[in-house]
Image 1: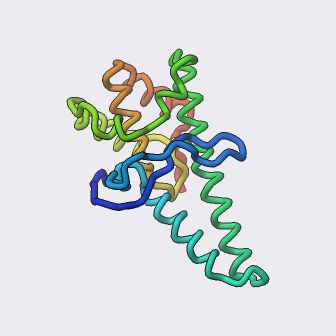
Image 2: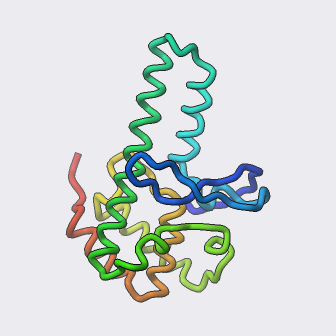
Amino acid sequence: MWTSDSSDSETALACPSGGEHETQTWASQHASSSFTEGESDEELQAFIRMRDQADKATEEWEKLNYDIHSLRCTRREVCTRWKKILLQLGYQKEVDSLLRVNKQTVLGDWENAERARELMEILCEDSGLFPRGVSPNERYFFIMDRLVSLDSADDFVRLAKEKYPKTEP
């Protein structure tokens, strides 16, 4: 789930709010995109490529456009959920910087990586923080790593399970 492979693409990383698009990009073209681009980003890019190749006056273009919109809304919803929990933990001033993932974050200290990985698995299995059928984006692994460093990760997981309980299909 948390693997890396090389890519020459630039990666947009800021948490979108409202109609804003992700605005922070990596300066290096040698950044590993899979650190921050989860399956949803790859899926989004695939939908955009297919839509760009489709004729605008077709049902296919409309369906792809709807899928792109839905995926962006889901990503925004997940980011908002994380933001709400961080605010509840008292990170009013730091919430935006905690949610921002950049090259320095990826290249930073990894002493908490194993614990962050465990907590992300717990979040995915025991909470509804990520909507059904949505895989967590890599960026949330890095955010969880920061929360472990701040001794807030266990509280975050507890609040996520309370606020967004897992629902049965």
